[in-house]
Image (tube, rainbow, N blue to C red; front, side, top):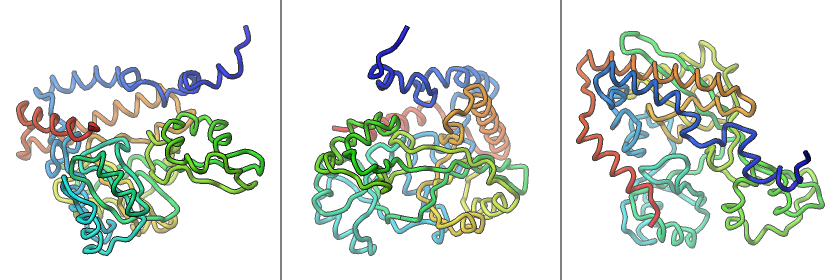
Length: 348
C-alpha cells in the first residue's frame, strides 16, 4: 500500500513518527503511576513542594519567574523589570527607560510555561499588540543575543555538601536555509519542525512569506528557545564534567532554598559556559524537565527511565528537606496556587 506524499507530510504523520510530539498524557503515563506511589510514601500529593523550599510549590507551578530569577546572583542575570497590569504603553516605556532597556526586548508572563506569551518586542507598536492580550503581570527582559543557548539541570541532596549537573540540553533555534529559488513560505512548509509551527509563523511573517531567501542564507524563525515554539533540543550530556558541576554548584549554593532545577541560559562560548560567564534567562524548579530527552531519535523507553529517575530525585530531596523542617504544602494552599497559575495562563 502506498501513501500519498501529501498525506505522509501531514502534521499528523509528522507527529506520529516522533514521540517528542505525542500528547503529554501518553508519554507521562508511567510517570503518573510512579508519582502516585511516591505520594503514598510521602503521605502527600504535594511532596515536591519541599524539593526547593525557597520557591513557591518547589517550582512546579504558581511561582513568580521574576522572584525566582532575582534569587540568582545579579552577575548571572540580564536586566529586567516587572510590569503589573492593567497598564498603558507609556507606563511600559517609562519602565524600560528607568532600567536602561532598549528595543528589542523580551516580554514574558510572570506566571507561565512552555513559551506561553513569550515574545520578542521590537518597537512601540508591538507593545500595544502585547498589552491587548496580556492581562496579567509580565516581565520585560533584556534581549541576550549570545549565540549559544543551553538548559543545565542541577541537583544537590540536602545531606551532601556538593551538587552536580545531571543533564545538559543544547538548543538549536528554529530556522530555514535559503536555496535561492524558494520563498520563505515554501521553505517553512518543506521543513517538518517549521511546518508544525505554520499557523503561528504565517501571522508572524505575513509580509515576508513570498520573499525568496538567498542561497545559503539562514533565516531564523524564532529567537525564543522553547520546544513548543519549534526549537530543536539536542542531548548535551557529553559536556558534563567536574568543571561544569563545580561552576553550577558554586552558583546554586548562592540561591536560597534551591536544590533541584534547570538553568535556561545563553553564553558566548563553551569556555564561558564552563567558567560561569553566562546570562540566566530563567531558573526553573522541580517542574522543569531534563530536556535532553527530546533529542531527535532519543529512545522513548530511555526517556521514561530518565523521567522516573528525575521524580525519584525530587522525592529524595523533598523528603530530606522535610526532615530538616521544610513542610509539604497543604492541599488548600496548593489549590490556590494552581488556580492562580491557570488563570494567568489563559488568554482573554
